[in-house]
Image 1 (tube, rainbow, N blue to C red):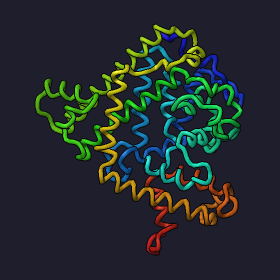
Image 2 (image 1 turned 90 degrees about the vertical axis):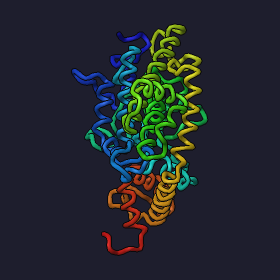
Image 3 (image 1 turned 120 degrees about the horizontal axis):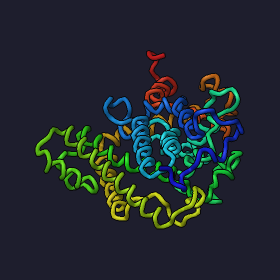
Length: 384
């Protein structure tokens, strides 16, 4: 049953185009569908989550991670009586702006753009859905509702008056996004489901890669209770079965904790509508304090044992070099850009050209970035 505090698509704050809504799809359903049909969404298939996409076919990519976040968010939204379509739309959009090679690529692009405002994948997502996607005859971007845009710009919390990026501030729906208030409950839920999904699934990929031994999971924060339950129930299992069963139970526990804590907060505050959620002093969607502490410990464990593993660091080193050299070459020599991008660029070394090169590189898949680097920066002549 829909809660009073759920976002209501029939009372949406609208789209920039002012276009009427569909006859049988809600406003938030249309947002979800437009995201899924976007070019940026398809490219997530070949973008790094932790392991570079072409290192193996069985590791998670940005696309599979995104689908997992969306599935968890939709399930939790249904249990909590929130709008499932809005939670799913925000979850599906949350990583669209990631450049190739995951966080290594993002850090390299941020450093390369140090004199031009830096780079943030969340802001790049906003640029994509409001301007860079060019598929519709009547407008640039995807013309999403103010609520879905709000979920994107507040993925890490409310904005501050001194920290509003120009593309957000200049958007016609800026005020309707209520930028300095908390996000609606569906956006809060999507953000925590992102944390929940990557912490759980990076354990699975870490075991698959051989970075973690199955027996180690017995003592890992959050994961340990599930691992011990699997061992007690099934005894000896193959590495893959043990890891999957442990991660499955971990996700189930975390979603249950998230739902229970959110129910407690909703019962205490009883927000009358989505606006009341925005005005609360604390988030309405949360993990219990004990689980939040355990998740932080799990992140530290993953950072030490998975994200800083020498194989991941080697790939990250190569990725940063590819992104830095691509940016430097194209920024200094915009004539090397493909025709449609070159027409948008300005003079060599200019801020205008930096913005075009940023958007060009950020939209690349891992494979395309590596090939472009070889075509542009390599001294080899045996490749076209």
